[in-house]
Structures are given as structure tokens and as C-alpha cells.
Length: 362
Picture 1: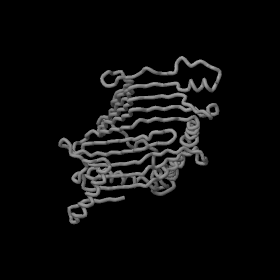
Picture 2: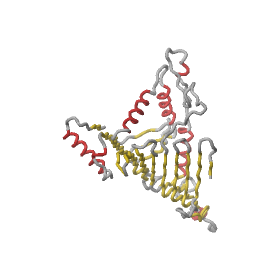
Picture 3: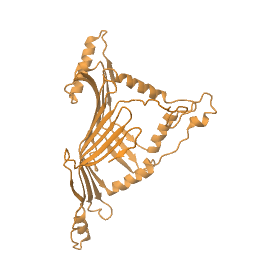
Picture 4: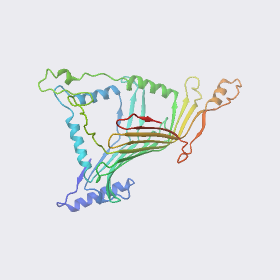
């Protein structure tokens, strides 16, 4: 971790050298317009490769401990301080650069099993900076994840880029979020599916129930504080005519050019000759979400084209070896291809929710 705050009190040469080195580093990451006048402090964090073993019960137990604490002790102070620090830093012209080497996520079938699935998450980069654009001061945050997958299921690594922007010199300026994902091509083997189903049942869905120690011992320990599981604070209710808390509106878009999944049969019947059974393919997928300052929300999911194909007919006939005629229809669903744009023939699902009225789904 490297942190440097540029002050005007001496050490100008050191400050200039530190700034120049940081600017060169950010420019080398694909930000050629990044300049030294856009920040007065910076933090650079580099994380070497790590491997994480994910067992849902253990993770939830740790989260329960940190949220509940010990009898009479509050564990939320550190989190509150961290949130306050980040909120104050967001108001300054600080810059952040985080580089995480590709981590590996290992999810076992259960905590006592050697069966597991391993996911390569790709390298992770986070950069925040400031820009003066059209007379306004904008804070930008970019999260880039490159090379996700690259294994048996995801043969072509996937890249994900998130760009968040907000004008800081305007009160309640909208937060704009753009998420772009490169094509996702997945081959799901039957043996993979069996393992995922077991992981979901024996690991992910195995949620333990923990006692709230503070609630149990609140009457026994002097000065103990009761912590609730979510919800509003006790003894406080919204009064009639109370003003709605305003928040910056959000305008978020996810853009995915291709999402395709092929189901591969490799069970006992096709062990010696695995073959693709079915393929589903979606093109030009867009997901939009918006919120208003008063809490109203809207969303939309659109798809430019969709098809579902039967790919296994020829192989099934060959395995049977009895001269069975080819199927008359290889396509389960085909022919839909939206023009997009102004033609209005995309598949679209949208909803609109405003406070004081019902949600509208179309």
C-alpha cells in the first residue's frame, strides 16, 4: 500500500516526483489523459494472487460475529469509521489505484468434501480520478475485471468494465453507471451440473442459524446493547407528513453483446463421445435501472435476438445405430431477431415504480 498526500509546505521536489510517478503509472493502465492537476493525494494498493475457499456456513458465521459482536460489545464502530473516512475522501481531490492479481475462488461441495469447483476471477483493477468537463467537476470511478474464466466451462475469458461518474459541484447530481461485458460463452457438462446442484444444496443453501448473543444476555450483562437483525431502529417510526429523504438519482446500464450456454451430455450414455445437447443464445442484451431523488424506480431488460437449438439429434441417431431418420425440426425456438434501435421489435420487459402508486410492469 502506498499513500501520498501533496501539501504546499516544503518537499516540492519529492511531491513532484511522487506525482509524476503516479501519473505515469495510471497512464500506462490505459488513461492517457490523466494529469497531475486532477488530484492532491493518492493511494496505490497492489494485491498478490490469493485463493479463497468459500464455505457458506463459515462465511455467514463470521458475518454474524461481526454484526452481533460479543455480549455487551458493539462491532459496528469500525465499519462506521470506515464509511465516514470514505465519505470524506470522496469530497476531496483524491485518487485511488487498486491492482489485484487474478484470485481463485474454490467452492467445495461441502466443508468435508474433496469435490470442488474452481473459478479464475481474472485480474481486478480499480481507478478513481477527477475531471473538469463542460464547466463541471466530475469524479470518475472505473472497475475493470479482465480474463474471468478461461477453463473448461468458459473457454474464452470474459472481461467486465464498470464506469461510475457523478458531478460533485452540483447537489444531488445523478450517478451514472455503465457496465460493459464481453461475450459470454459457457459449456455446461452434465457432470458439472451435478456438482453445482450438490454445491447449491450442501454448501450454498446450508445456512446455519445463530443465536443473537447480545439479545440473550442483554438482561444479564450490565450496559449490554441489543442489536437487531436489519429493519428500522426500535422506537422510531415515520410520522405523517414526514419529508422523504432525498438521494442522488441513479442511471445504470448493463450492455452484454452475447450470452450463450451449451449443455453438453457426458454421462454414461455419452461418456466415450460427449456431445452438445442444447444451446441457448441471447444477443444484444441490455439491462437498465433508474431511480429518482424521491425514491421512484424504473427498470428495463431488452434482448435483440433469442434462439434455442437442439444440437444432439445427429449424435443420438449415430449412438442408436438403427438408421433412425433425422428429426424434422432441429430448432426448438428460432426465427426471432429483433432489429433494435427505433424499430421497436426487441423483446422488452420493463417496470416503473413511484412512491404512492403501484408498480407497472409491461
